[in-house]
Image 1 (tube, rainbow over the protein chains, first blue to last red):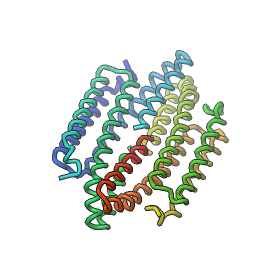
Image 2: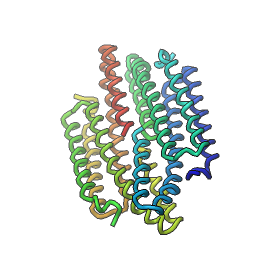
Image 3: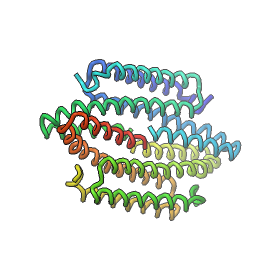
Image 4: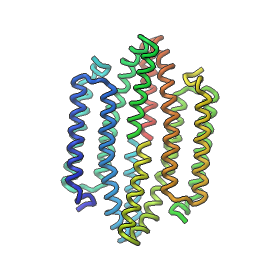
Length: 93
Length: 93
Length: 93
Length: 93
């Protein structure tokens, strides 16, 4: 059981929409859509993906970090460091 | 015909791989994968999407913008402004 | 007293270096440096700023959020939501 | 002479304001400001820096790339590739 378990179906729906958007990008390329329109759509897919990431981060921090913090200070610190590295990877893309 | 027409198949292949990665994300959520692993995979999909965007931008600037600039100074400037706004949208995600 | 109090001097030093880099950018513009070199330097300053942000986020999550979570579940959740919105603002730039 | 020469004073003013914002960040840290407020200010400085970068990119593409494109196709392609790599560095921060 994970922090996001309660909203699993919501995340799955959002990812299915994103999958549909990526197929839409393929269609645009296939039909020689204007480059700038493809770039705009790529920015929109990236934003949707990031929204999923921020949602997961929120729930992760609430559940996992809190549980770890309650249990043990060192483990809590390690969990926070791990989450911040994940944020860094999101920022670097 | 677009700037990316010569590499159409390459872009389609990359987008199909990205589609597969998004399906992989759904599988991870479905199987209650660890939040941080899902975030890492999201960063990787974003990076792949951005790679497609940068490739398209490169070809767009080479072909469309240059052609416009050669034809007419005002039209060339408008094309550059349009491309920079597309970059801004990519940066803002 | 804040989460970052222990490393205050380190943050001040990093921000002073960033201030120096911003003055360096002014010098580059003043001396008509090549545009791409200015852009590279801007990316480097942004990265340094982001490093400060990630450091503060790490300490904030470790200290403030954990303290709030230990005290009260609702307050802990509010602190996490606040931190995630801060991450979102960093991502959107 | 560079693409941005005409707007040099505008860029210098913006960078001076950014320098002031970075000094403001030092003051916030020095006075133990709330972590989230510091992060919000960092996002604002990053955005201002990025605005300078996008302005320079616009002028670079308009002037340098156009000149290069007029002179020689290979040189034009190299200039575009160089500009796209600069965009990539901005995206990666």
